[in-house]
Image 1 (cartoon, rainbow, N blue to C red):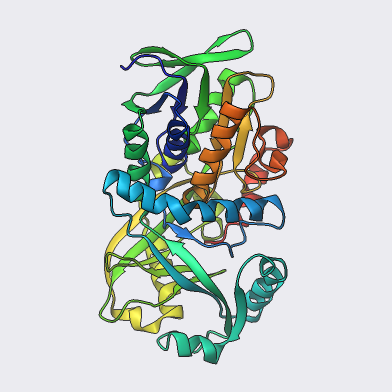
Image 2: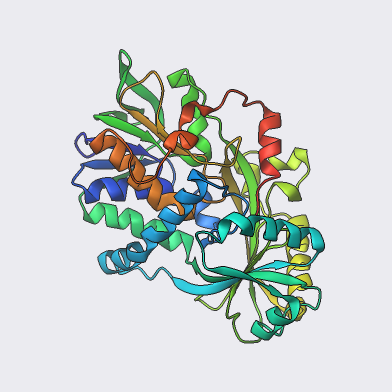
Length: 397
């Protein structure tokens, strides 16, 4: 194992690799520790759709964080592709957030009241929608048109962030962390199955597995796995010219590799027994989700009835009790930070999370967004299972 680093990052998904990349870019000696393979958790099956219109964002700091991370991609995608040679399948396109019912239209238009203060967007009726994409269903009654959204391949982004961090001096080691090492109230390293590693600080960015460190810190890390699934289809016809989403029917995106991504399932699609089955259960694609997603897609785009199913991806998302990420120092401890609980926005919010953690570590404060209290670990007082069920109903993909 390499020599002791300045910072240990536990977890090498998009969030962990973003933290490693942003720290290494500022000259910090980083070690990323991953118990499986890079991107083996939520990042491997994520859609990679960066839109600011979903219900996961709320007015104020949440929306500000989403905008700030979106802007990171203005340079990040090019930087990573030049640094690593990895094609991220990156695309910028207009997007449509469709309403197929009056309640969807009301939801979208209510959110537009505060969203349009920051985003170029406007409402169009169903006829205007079908002028943009004639193949969409006559059931579409309207949509908000967003001038620009982003979509990329989440797994390739994960690899590029990890390789980018390594090219800047970070080390990536496949080791399971089984404990934390402390000196009084200061965390000074981690224990792995291959020995101890010491450092100035430890960043816990292990997605749904972050909660296992609660017992070591005597502090709750309230995040649990929430199952999600999506499909990749191949169909005869031109790609969609816009990135499409809907509050009740998820997303529909023509990827740069020629496949159509359809999804995703979230909390609303499962009963309580299936919603929080655990990571191993979550990795198993289900027939019920496949049929549900195909029907949703056909409702929006009837021509997909004859599409070919290429792949079905399933896995856990790290759900927090309010769907917002948990980022910042752990109360009562020095030298340990948390970066988890991004729910369905880990790809979108990974870069700004990396910047936030790098500022906390190097500058002692986080200035890249205002009012970081919304995301601090100590904000939860009620974290029983009912909190997670309520949060799952807010998931909007």
